Picture (cartoon, rainbow, N blue to C red):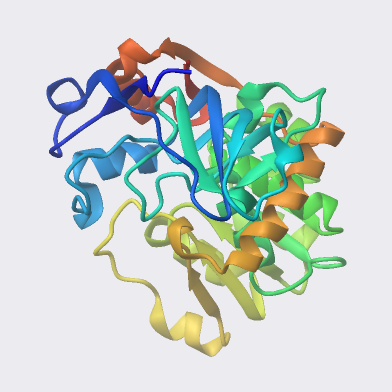
Length: 329
């Protein structure tokens, strides 16, 4: 193979069409404990968009960044200490661009061997390519405080990337899963994605309808909007319950402190780049099993070639519950 490849990159933060470039860069070499993956599909996540744009106070830690943390493809080479038999494996990749300058928007990417997870033969590469950031976050939102067998889990934003994973793994973990939706036309899709019960937020007595399923309160909430939903969460949460939140619409909004305190609530804030490695590996195993069983599937909203990566990132920012966006290498 040649020592150069096609990749997308940016050297300053800003709007996608102003800063993203596609060109030839050196092929990365795997170091000890690493593998090089030939990327077939690169998944685009809003977190990738945020890093490129400078949202949430993020800055560039490297002079050049090849974006995207998620992807799927085939192991092409291994570094010292990695079994050579891994060459040729179909894998999905996570955290490729976490504290590293080199993500999956390239023909090849190098990651720690544990971050290249074997993808079952009957699972599309697309599904593996969009799994990492969203799936592991959803798993962590459900399981960060231990098993959920016999518990009740409330999932908000159930048709987003994180929400779909949370539904699937909570149900597979033995929980009774309740989801909230904003519109009636979302109910059937959410039930198909794994919820046992769906409560519409556009109808009366939302608290009462959740309490009808969980009279003593829900044990855990996987929360997409802490500021917007905290008042509802505290009404339906069990004493000693957990809110695991990974996003909020208003970063400076107040929360109902005393009601949360009186219920001895744990509020767990989640950021995917810094989960414990053992949690990442447990999530990777459970999520792969959910894919293999057909319990987790992501709709693909749009596909783009590498040369249109700026369009892909703009589309990912708009996609929401419509599905995920991928770049095909």
